[in-house]
Image (cartoon, rainbow, N blue to C red; front, side, top):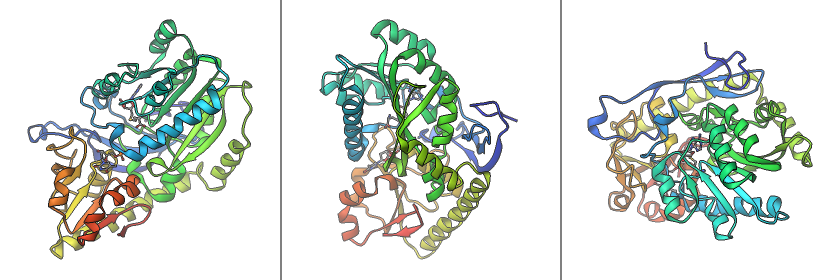
Length: 406
Ligand code: SAH
Ligand code: TMP
């Protein structure tokens, strides 16, 4: 049996989603035969309080020169990262003469471009060369590497120690997270800050958004588990900020112990986690029951619509949709295709379930009766953009927080 990635403690399995392909592994027909699958199983460690996958594919299987997720595809996320940069600058860099910020998982530069614009020294660490190249072409300093202690030493040698270490939607991707924290200790100044955000366990449990569970998301963080992890390295959470992004996330601000004032929010939110049972295995078993119910409800709706002769298309081939489609068994018997704006995904097939991905530009000429919204985290942006679909009688199937039709 595998052990906890944080403390080597015993793992308690509480959910199984079945054989799962690489979430961003959009593929061509000739590659169907050799498609890679692993068992998507989720466990909890009562000691570290960390929810984690039991198996994760190798990083090189997920992050490479054909990585399919480009952060810049959502306008609202662009705005979110502009505000993220403002927060970092106004709260943590204000009194520093020539600050240096380093971000891992910097992707196409969606966050760092806001530092570049203000002339702030920055560096992105991004192993997927295709998305990193988009950033480099925009003049954002980026190195194509996985972040680890060796990489941190190299950065310090070439650029000096960082005032702020930043990360969004990447810390929860890295199984060797302890080596990342070691690397952070090497990289930042003694009084430097670590600021990162990831999907939040509390929101996943509340909304039954089990689609946040896929190969890349090896961890589902809570304040309690992050506190446990960083405590092992003599660091502590000094502030927390809930975020609306990705269906509900949490931003953590961390520093070396005793270096900064701790906001009282840290204690308050930790107590809420305990009161709400986030550190309680019963709550996780209950989540699993909710997932099973969610799958049954969604499938009976899709089957009913098909038997009534309705056409259905998927909207946005998100990484999350890979879990929903494979777990529920949604395939080309239910969906005619999935429309998506990312050129790298178009004219390929969805991982595991092999539904054709078509360019978003074709949606307006081929409105289905129903569109199954896989990108529910972009709901407002998409409803605004697709007013004509509703005007022409189209309906949205939304499955978060509850299955409903718009
Ligand atoms: N920060 C962006 C991108 C998130 S996707 C956003 O929030 O939109 C996760 C990114 O992390 C991918 O671009 C992936 O290539 C990168 N990544 C994965 N493992 C990494 C590691 N060990 N070090 C640095 N980046 C990593
Ligand atoms: P994610 O941020 O939830 O992972 O979703 C990103 C995917 O959604 C990406 O493939 C682009 C797609 N998308 C659309 O197709 N249309 C849209 O309007 C938005 C916001 C995203």
